Length: 192
Length: 250
Image 1: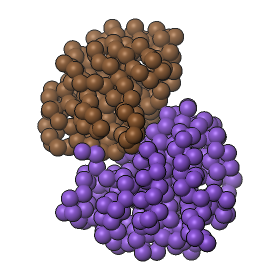
Image 2 (image 1 turned 90 degrees about the vertical axis):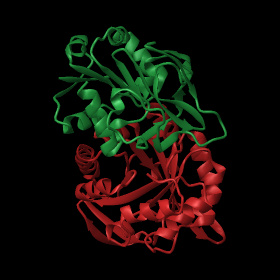
Image 3 (image 1 turned 90 degrees about the horizontal axis):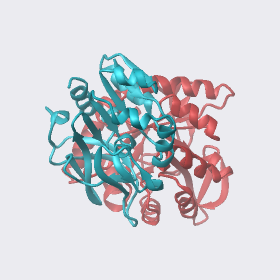
Image 4 (image 1 turned 60 degrees about the vertical axis):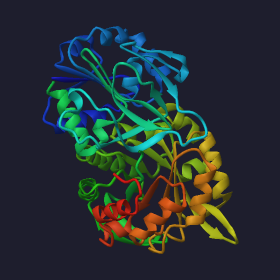
């Protein structure tokens, strides 16, 4: 069973639809036991970092996420909350990835909205994907590039499009909204 | 590199796709879910659905077909039509929409833009602006293009961006459904005046129109309806054409 974390900033429905379409049994839950016993956990997110993190902390879900041993995939805000710190509402994250999240600089079009390709793709998430494949991004904050970066994208500045460390995987783009390319990436995660 | 977006727009009336000319003479254009699926497979980058149903039943049918679309397609889609509160917005988001498009309700109560952006994030809020050239000015219209307001498009675009819109959907009403080309001057002026993405709409007739809007304005997306619904332009050929003109296209 695949668990999708239920919280106040999820686009859980889209992720649920995408994973179900691939033929998996999915549960949307905030029950620690369900999350701990799932084969894989997806941590989605569309929304604002401060209120999302406050919600998770109030339910101690941040601690549950940090201790998960199965493959975990953070998406968009989910990825940013797995980082150490976000400039958005001055938010301390879960801290799996030692990366800072900050707002794109002023004077440019923000949000970064649309399809963009990635560079330096590595690791199992990207196996079998076209190196120039485009993914759908929509975000105003970005994670810095660091040792855990497994894909970089370029919009105004280079940033982490994907991070990976131990059993934690994270993507800034939305695989559930990235047509066939996104399906392949989700499939890669689900068959880890 | 960030790609320019090609966005088919589906006007929905009582659960069917429809299309008019200059916002009038509405014709049936098919089942929205089947059409959405076809456009997704053909390479559309996003979809926009605008519910123009005028009945009290609208909210129920709106969430019904939004759920159906969300279950079938895996590209982002925006939904507009009758979203006038956090509550209706939440219903549409829960049904699976990625972005909300607001128009008349934002003109009636600009604070709605702020409320939706605060709750769902700016990236979720598209302010749609319908505008027509009247007495030497681009005037903003509400109620599906039926009522003139006192606002000018440029002025309203800046206000909407300041209030927290994540994107503008700019429709030139005189171009709508006429296939006479996008209103380039208008689009260029507005896209240059705001720091959020602008989608150009109204008037797409041939692939060169898309090329012009992407080379002569800072619009990052171009929206069209009738040319796609009635087969005048096929999305794969359009994208091939734009790539051959060195425009960044997926």
